[in-house]
Each structure stands twice: as structure tokens, then as C-alpha cells.
Image (cartoon, rainbow, N blue to C red; front, side, top):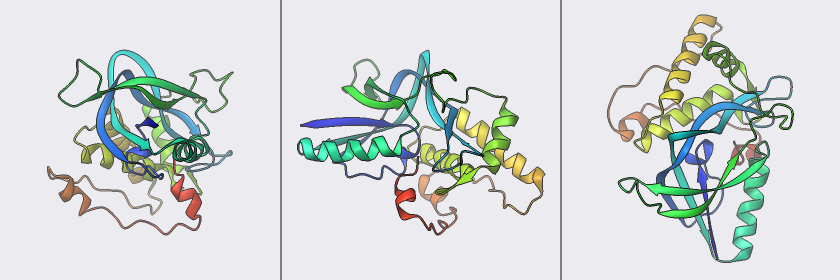
Length: 223
């Protein structure tokens, strides 16, 4: 028995479950957008965070990581139960083809699970929809929850995409605007500096130390 799940948000750098194999690659006809509310990890019901979901766009590609779980029904059940708790704001599990780098014509895997959300504010209470860049940046700059700040989620994703060699222009643009907002607020929040260098190792050497988390389970289930 085996199943594969594709991560495009925090699963890229923090899967949080036991897996047997990790493969970097992409899925087709989807792009990463920050249109989903998070009220229990990086935000609260009163001040929701903005986290990633996928928008169906013909011709687009979304890079990330596919994780494999082998070993029988029990291991699969445990992994899926964990993922369903963690990804509770996503109302759909979609099956997609997964492609490896250098092999764009034929899928390396089929039937890969990806957590997605219905883009409708009526049927999906967690769907925020698109917003102007400045508005999204202000929301991300200020939202926080049990797992930490919304901005740290964004900056971690930016670093993770750099580390796998496939930076996302949407992530870079939004992170740049969040840094601008933080600098303009003048509220004592340190602004991350742009890090130069071409290697993931060089980037990691400049990363700030992880903040202490009081809720260990929440950290492990960061979404």
C-alpha cells in the first residue's frame, strides 16, 4: 500500500508526519495564491491569517514537494488523519498528476493527493478571495496565532522555495510588500533584510533562530 501527497505551503519545509520518500516537482494548471483564511495556526477568528491555496489556471505550474507513505493501511491512516487535522481549512482533496524536473511531458506520479479549497465565499467559510497586494500585506504583517506570526509563514515559504531551487514570483512580491509594511509601521518589529547569495546554504546561515513555541502540537501542525 502507498499514497502520495503534494505540499505547496508549509508542507514544503515542515511535513510533520512520517514519510518514506520526498520528491521535488510540480503540478500543472494550478498556481499558488494567498486566498485562504487560517484561524487556528497563524491567525485567529478575530484576525485571520492568509495562507496558501491553489487556483486553477490553465498553463500554470506550481512547484512543491511530494511525500510518499508506504507500509500498509495503518501508516496511511495515521498520516491522513494528521493531514486532515492540520489542513482542516481546506475543504477538498484533489487528485493530480505530479511531474519531476526535467520530465515535463509525462507524469512521474498519478493520483497524488493535494489539499485544495472551493473558491466560493458562500460555500467555503475559509475562502477570503483575492485582494489588492497592499491589503494582503497589511493582513499578513499583523496576523498571528498559536503557531506564530503570519509573516513568518510567508518568509519561511519564500526561503523554502529558494532552497528547492524554484522561487515563486507571487511569494517574492508579497514578501517584499510585507517587509515594506513592517518598515513603514515603525512599531519595533524587525524587518528581514534581503539576503544575497546563490546557495541555500548561504541563505540558511542568515536565518534567525526559531522562536520558542509554547504549544508543541500546534507547531507540528503548522499550516
